[in-house]
Image (cartoon, rainbow, N blue to C red; front, side):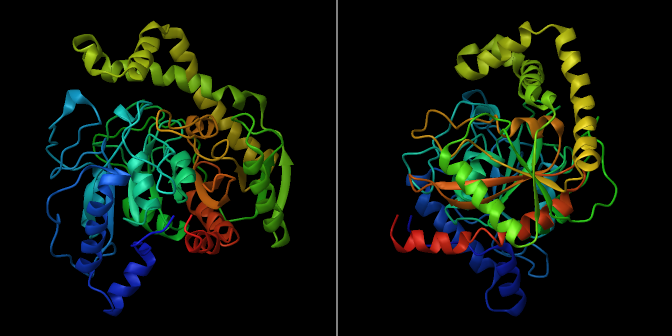
Length: 444
């Protein structure tokens, strides 16, 4: 992969703007030009305006000069939000989603709407992987991950109902952060399954994700969270890290496991305590319970469209809705109860029984799949989404096809700040920057 332009990190942008080295508007204009130039090949954006959305930025604001790609299920008052659905072509929201409004208030520029799978489920859009266009970027936040991975923007918004932030971040070689359930308001975000939906961030560094989280976190109007997660009080960042004897998503490719093992060895040499652990058996059932919740809640959200105009709904989405319509009320209620119980049991197991600060696990089974018909397997992320706990992916190495491999770090609910501190420490030991430089130099 050779890039002609790579957007600076948010930390670099803020330093350059504060020192007067660069004007915020200049950085935004460079990103906009890169987005336009890459659109015919990368297809990261569902919508790009014809001209720069903002020509003047208050350089004293904390995100001045930062361009953002916003997943096209998140409302923007000045741009269409169409959910990658023919049923909603031309839809114009009346107002910004809460998270978008907070970004604008902090000085960020919304560059455009990034491609999503239809309704944030499995029907892919046209986006390709920025490392190799023959491979998927993952989903459902396909365009957001690709836009950051290609160096077009330093920040993108995504959502995760199973693995739609963590997995594409791993596939595209960027940082993906899914906070504790309810941390970022979902007002103005199309639900797929409100019991599972999280708003998340894509950045080029963990420090950037932590910086942005402080600016956008907090409940929003019309966003009730009947939270099932136990929120920890102040959590100090520690380095007692669990490694799974058996990955929760199933078998992983040898290169993925070897990269995780090598990273764990490096962390151990630098002072982390690495502990091999077995997850509570019930956690392996979490993906099945999550699918029950997703089917019923998707049927409630999209059932009217399905009944009225089934031809406007993709086959994967029709199948999910039909599963939801067939589900017995008692099965749905059981999944809801188990979600709360399992969240509390996992919290007790992680923090008290095992006294772990985090788990180091696979974000996917390996490199992204070849082709664009599938966005990959979400099984390695779905349990943590079901439990509502925070997770962050950091890129760490490359697989045999020359595509990125990531490491997923999972923490206790409410430990977002501590988890990001730990992830930043881990990130510094991946040697990712030097690996990327070497890869670019070889023209891969």
